[in-house]
Length: 452
Image (cartoon, one colour):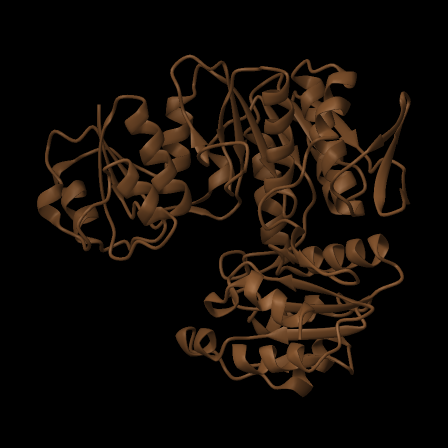
């Protein structure tokens, strides 16, 4: 089978291309810009295309064209594929076609998707289960973000609610048709696509209806909006709610209380305890025994960039987190304060997505940084120019966050000088972003804060 990827440089797109090549498919692709680590990964597998779009690459012998979200609807290769009448699909649509004979588990929700998915994968791997997967971050235990084989009976999928492709405006997670689905919670996001909260909530309502008949929905009973959705749904499926387990923190280690005793963890924060409860419930439906789950989860160190340790000295520690939405921001700050109650917290969030810079959505950030003694916001001015957005003032941000002591950085240098001038003693640093702070090296940046 021959498959061509338009916009092969995407994180999932290039990993899927590699997975198909390993499966024996003939794979080609194209993109106008391919960044790291996609470039190195494609070079390693001899799949890196010449830059740019070229309609001559599209020929009648191609069995399927997988279209990435980075491409535009008038992409010349897409136009040629349409003219030839080739089969064109988004990657979630292609994944479904490839996994029709497998048991599909789809992890959805506004937050925690990557962590819960990686927890389930970690547990299944530790007990020797054979499975394929699609996850939104590179995990230390796994070579790639996508694995797709012929024989694995199970497929674990991180289900994103963003749009499938430029010509398929359905959310990705509507296309997988899970046998087991999980929703971790609902908090408004992607306002450029879902302009109202109700419109956003409706995508989860529709997701529930995609669950296969007699399938299972695992859901967070502590989320009121989600609980109401589940109560109104009349689908003929199983419904299994979960709650955050009780826990204590002793000498910097979080212990989860279970019927079989306390389980020490390498992750921390109430949101991570909720993620563990979610992963436990999914694994239970997959036939994993409780003792096996607890033995495995003790060794789980977290997903990349999800409240991840960066650096430390004898007194202070620096963490990074893939957080930019209000709910994630608040949960991450609370987790650090709970874990290190005797340390003041310097919390810096980068706002760079369309949602984060949307004037209506900014109101959702009110009081989210209340627990941080030194709250700060970084907005790269280049990001504002690219979106033709109006400039944002420090006073406006202070009012928006309801944080009179909030500091605003409009460039990396001013943020660097702020941290260089600060004594780290008695203070921890949390860097939150779904971007990269203008491409800075976080380890070097952390060292500037820790070591003067």
